Length: 208
Image 1 (cartoon, rainbow, N blue to C red):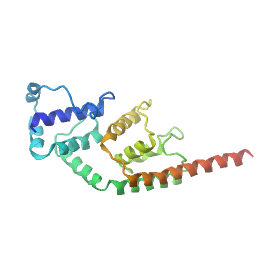
Image 2: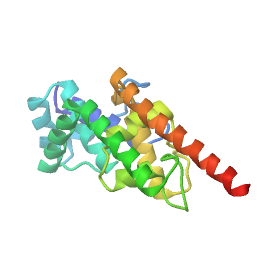
Image 3: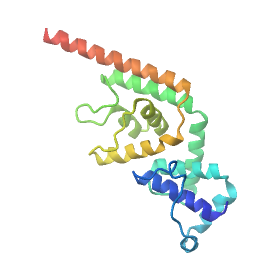
Image 4: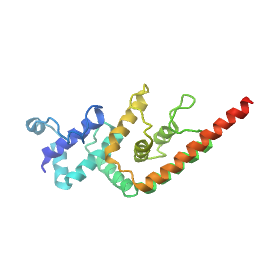
């Protein structure tokens, strides 16, 4: 793999995370790219460095780690290296982090008296997104929960929420849901069902 191959991976992932209609998995990473145009770029040494240092799968992960944070912006510096190391650390303990994050969501539901963490309340963002924006839960948790409950809407009129939702949806093919994660998710589902049932009972008692 040479630097131009790395560049094509970069283009494919950039297009995947910024274009609703392009699916890097569906199109097998195929993009239009000119070697002559690439050779005229000032950052060619960056792609050459990656081609020497990483395997193809690692390069995909390297760019992935940046695009899930910054969308279309790639930092051609040590910042990208740092994000990749952080991403690898999260991946190595993903099940643990997911279970921890679900516990946080449930705790915040109880503290804030929120029945459903996936919908807006009092014109505020859904609880899950509030915790994500506050760096209280990881993006991988958002992706896993979305793959299970399918709550993220990329067609929202909220510009800020729309961009985050697109990133989450585009990240889905790269995040695996394990049986243990499904079991943990049932804990959240049970909490939601109980909260909504309690809320209905309160409405009935109030109306009597």
